Image (spheres, rainbow, N blue to C red):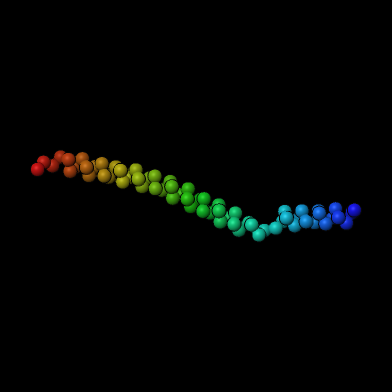
Length: 65
């Protein structure tokens, strides 16, 4: 009985300290960080482009044919 319990405890410790899936989790965090940064950068870029295109449209609208 005691030997079976010891095997289960050893198996549990092995699962806790296993590092096989750690790389996958780290890559997932890096991808999430890059996606968040890209989203924030795109929102800023969209705002700048909208301002520039509005200005161009206003300037072109003042010309008469």
